[in-house]
Amino acid sequence: WMPLPGLFSGSVLLVLPTAAAWSTFALVTLGEGLLYLSAGPGWAEALSGVVSVVLTGLGVFGLSRLSDLVSEVHDSRVALSRLAVEHERLRFARDLHDLLGYGLSATTAKCELARRLLPADEDRTRQELTEVLEIARKALADVRKVASGYRELSLDK
Image (cartoon, rainbow, N blue to C red; front, side, top):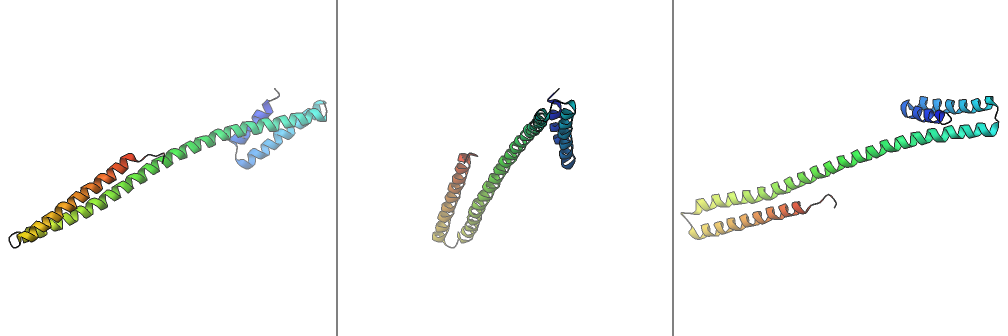
């Protein structure tokens, strides 16, 4: 029966609101001391009982809170991992959009110009088509570079 007041006081700290919990904890501790004194064993035994209640109560409270904090930290790490993945996906999509957008816009403009120049100036048309080919190759290389960098990405970094 000796550890029951300590277990009770530790449980009170976990269940009740903060102010009421600590007040009840103090009352249980004081009650344990008064109970020992009224039973007559003496001050040393009463002090031992009070210390036992305090240590057991704080131990129960501390271990339970530690478990809660570990769960919160784990949940936070999972959320941070998800956010990191989402951030990387957005970065990848933005980079891919920028690279492809520029390459495709330039390719479209060059092709339209080449189509207009075709009957009038074959040399210039050939030059424009060569530039279109270079732009398309560069855009393809950029996309491959971004895609290979994305595949190499690890959450450990």
